[in-house]
Structures are given as structure tokens and as C-alpha cells.
Image 1 (cartoon, rainbow over the protein chains, first blue to last red):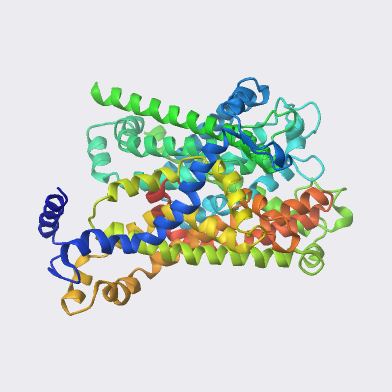
Image 2: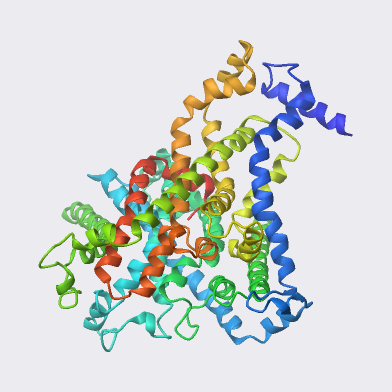
Length: 320
Length: 280
């Protein structure tokens, strides 16, 4: 079995010309297909295994234990107790619902504005290189600094935004929306939009630039309006890139706790707590590792369900 | 006829207005950060929300640089980020090379595992990592941060390096190997010089990521002289939340390395973000 698969691979390789140079090196076939590639891979695999895979398994096991650093004597296996607590924890369900508002509120604007920017940057205009560098700059700003900067902008003492909102009549008086449970979530969402537009603009711009220009010329000759060109050529070409970036970005945003943690810490009154920040505050402030791990498993399950639903939708679309 | 000619002009005006809007939105927060950092302490409350300061001072920067711990935070962060970037790039160059040049059993599985590591909630392992790091006595050490960040960044950096290696024709090293080089010699003497820009871009991406990391650093570091910049700044903010000018001066300083690396990796942004498509 082993030798057959190796010989088949050798045939493939010879066909693709990958190993023409050294038909029999130090060790030959086995060396080339098993030992040598893994020599190059081993540092990466060892680190990922030790720092990510092993802790992941330990983390899942924590969710069935009571591990609170402040009460070291209470530790031990507790079965499903953490999950039972989770089920009746109103803060958890609040965070659960907030995760959706945070993720899709951020994503919709990041995507819409990012697509608009990509379309703009795909046209010709003077000073394009400079403009492109400037609009992509927020991507390079560290997340904690984006969070602090926006928190300051929303602060009526040193930030202009509350005064603008009051002047526009959107707020009764110039107050900090981060302190208002009904509005607080929009603070981190705005910061996240600012931070995330460049990502979508860059990936979609790359996809736009790969669309052959002749298609647009042909459409123009056939008398298509710009709108028709957009919906009949641009969007279908972008669709695969849109699908993959939106899917990955959704997961990434759902896991992204830095902005909220720095701007509001989950408050006021848990109005901005999402699952990711709830994990972190439980682990970091309460040092309750067992419960934090149970929340983490719940978040993982939510993401898995999301991925499974997307797969199902994709299969249905492919079938019809 | 006239209306047909006018529409493009109107569209062009709209286009420039939209571009101006994007540039304004992107830059305004950073302008504000710099503005408050330059505003003298005595007028910060009277004109904190004015668009333009009536006086400008470098006093805040002086205080932050010479009368606070920020220089120490800065050098801690620099050490962590450079260490992470160097280690990650070296390891990811090796694994990216393996993905690019070898066909071997288990390759698809390893690629799948690396993709999954980019998607599961990293916060899930923050508690186990804390316990492990504490058990081996590495809490409050920059080494533990470098090791953890390196592992986090390897998958993305591997895919990035693979895309750079894929762009180099295989014939080059095969020719060198015909001439009697071992594969490793061919890699070192022929391929590495050609992929230097790729190595630089990977260094830049990883540096930026490590420079920004906050949550694991908060968890693993609590002694003042080991804090990285994000942790230090956040601690400073929660302790002295009225020294606006100094906080923002510190923020501006934190921005400097990111911006330098951003200018450096700008050309590779498209490649980096589309190959990974998962990086923040």
C-alpha cells in the first residue's frame, strides 16, 4: 500500500518535472517524499502543535472543570456544570445576541464601503498611488490604538463627534454614546468599519483588476449601460472573491475582541459584551478559566454552525 | 447632446467627492490624535473640540519620552515584534518552501489544519496558554510572547511565503542541483536571494501583527518593566485618564513603527491580504 502510493507519486512528479534533477539523491524516493519536506515543515508543525493544538485540547477539557485561580482548592472535574450555568446566564445570551449585531453591523458597512472604494480605485485619476496609500492607512493602525483613538473621538471633552451629533439633532446633548447602553455598540462598530474598509477594498480591488477589459468594451459596443456592465460583468466576476472574503471576515470579526475590550470593556451594563470579549473578561478579570472555556466552546460551536450553513447553501446553489 | 456631455463631468465630480470622503474618513481620526498630542496642556479643556489648535507644543512628547516608562514599553514591544518577525519569517520560509516545491503525503491535511488555525477563536486557548506559561515559569517574560506570537503567525506567513516561492521558476534550482548543489545549497544560494523582497514583506506583515497584539500580552505580562506598548498604554490610560495630551502623544509614538512598516509593505498588501484573506 505504502510503496504503491509512493510509486504513483513518483510517476506524477516525473511527469511534472519536479524531481528531474536528482533521480537518486541521499535516500531517493523515501527521502524526497517523506523526510525532506517534513524537515522543512517540522519547526512550523512543532510550534503549531505545541502552542495551538495542545492548548486547544486542554481548553476544551477546561470547560468540563472548575478552574478558578482565585479559588485553587475548588478545582476539579464538574461535568457539564459550566454549560448548565451558561444556559441560565443572562449575560451569556446578551453577549450571544450582541455578537450578531457586532458582526453583521460591522460587516455590512465594511463590505459596502470597501466595495465602493475598490470600484473607485479601479478607475483612473491623478495622484492615485498617494490616495491609495492614504485610504489603506487605517489597516496599519494597531487595533488597540484604533480603539483608543475612536474612544477619544466619542468623548465630549476632547472629541468632536458628540458635538457634531448634537448639532445635527441626533443627540439631545453632546454626551458620550459609549456610556449609553442603547447606543454604545455603535461606537466599536464605527471603529471597526474604519479599520476594516481597507481589507475589503484591497482584496476586491485585486479581483477587479483581474477582469479582462475586453469584456467591458464588447458590452459597450453592444450598447450596455454602465449599470448593466456592473451587474452583468463586474458582479459575477467578483462573486467568488466576495463569497470567500465575506465568509472568512465574518468569522474573523466575530472573534475580534480588541476594539470592544478597549473602548467599553463590554459595558455599560453588558450592552457591548460579545462572546469573544465575554471569554476574555471572564478569563482575565475573574480568572475563571473553566467558565471562560465553556463560553469559548459555545463560540466555536456557533462558528461551526455558521460554516455548516454556508456549506449547505453553497451545495444547494451548485446543484440548481 | 449637451446632457450626454454633462453627465460624465457630473460623474467625475461625484467620483472626486467620494474619494475625498474616503480620504477624510481614513485620516480624520489620525489627525485628531496628532492634534491633541500637540495641544498644550493648559488649553486642552478650553479648546479640546476645536478643529485647529491655537498653539502647538512638543511638551507632551517630551514628557512621554523622558519622564515615563514609555521608552521601556517601546523597546519591549520592539524586541517582541522583531523577534517574532524574524522567527516567523525563518520558519515560514522553510514551510512555505516545502508547500511550494514538494509533493508529499499529508500535505492537504497540513494545509487544512493551517487554514483552520486562522479561523477558530484564538481566545479559546488564552487560559490554557496562561497555565502552561505559568507552569514553566515564563510569565512576565518577553520570550513567552515571542513564542506564542510566532506560532500564531506561522500559518499566514507560510501561505504568503509559498506564494512568493511559487512565483520563482523551478528550473532555477534544478539547474543548480544539476551542477552538484544539494537542494538546501540551491535554496540558500539561488532561491533565497531572489525571494528577498518576499522575505521582507513577510517580516513587515508579521511585525505589524505582533506590534498590535494586546490580549495575550495583557494576560501573560503584568510587571511594569516587561509590558509591551499596547499593555503599557492601556494601563496608563486607566490610571491617568485625564492626561489626554500625553496619552495621545504616546499613541502617536505607537503609530510610528506601524506606519514605517506600512510604507515598506504597501506594495505587497494585495498579495498578502488575498493569499491569506484571513489576516486583519
